[in-house]
Length: 119
Length: 108
Image (cartoon, rainbow over all chains, first blue to last red; front, side, top):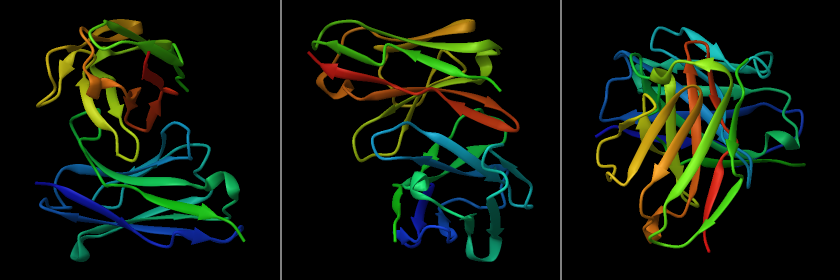
């Protein structure tokens, strides 16, 4: 069974960089999949941030592209998100998720982690 | 960029009733790339329908999807208490994934 688990600080100061890691178990991170990040501000809808494959190829949402960096560490079965210059609008539950290369949807999700941007 | 508009924003129905949720795309999209999720409070989204009409594994047959072009529909034939949740449509393109803003299905 594929499992994903987000980890990282729950509180980030404005203008700092938000850093999260997703640990994958039960499935090879080097398989033919895309590993994504989706966020959800409190009480609001879902927003795709981007995804990465095991080789490091990335796609980012255009409006976030200048602030987003994703990376993958195959030896640790992890992939990561960095979002720079955060403000209060970046406060959200951040989910990591898997999308197989051949399908249009995310089929496995982490439980989500709340990141609050506040001084 | 494609925009997905879901309607209504909130739908108030009673158990046993039929629910019809709409997802409209700002331009024609392939139904192959249109997906529906269900999200309950405090939980990650759960895949319901992929390819506009294909039920995901374990999804009851009271859930059905339809549509093409710019208009897509999620229908729940007879609401069960556990179906009251928020529903999102999603479109996939290689370089972009777009979510609709969601429809909240609440108990009347």
